[in-house]
Length: 154
Image 1 (cartoon, one colour):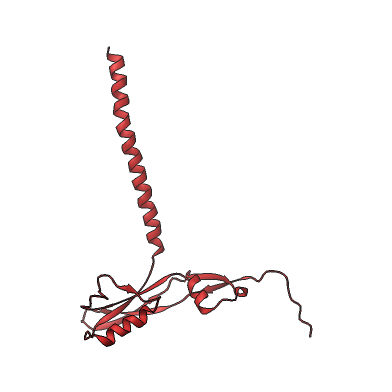
Image 2 (cartoon, one colour; image 1 turned 90 degrees about the horizontal axis):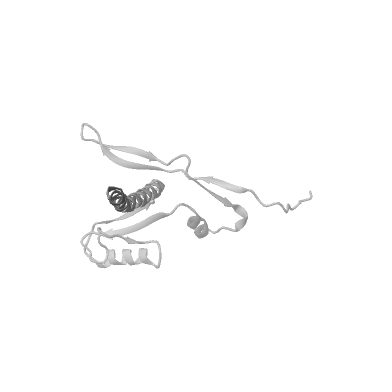
């Protein structure tokens, strides 16, 4: 069997990202129910498999998911401003502070930037720019109107 190598570029690979997370929710009886939260079916990344991806490269190309951590009542790891645990050995530092300390509670926060926020921010910026233009126009308009009234009333 002869194998022919193609010079054509390899096609992009469309990789769907699916997940199901379960969150607690109390029903009317006060019993905790576990409700599934499913990913958007349109969540995907596109990559070319010939780019020699490593797991780290693959993860850096996917939607950004921030991992941060806190330890309750700890001055270096406060809950009000959790620290990122994804780089520079920070996860090991977090675990080291847990081992060295007396605190028994803390947490990890996993979050993803909401693309809707980017749209909302752009809309707000457009609104502010439009408002500033209107205010500038209003400031100029009365001066022009007064100048016209002064020249016609004389």
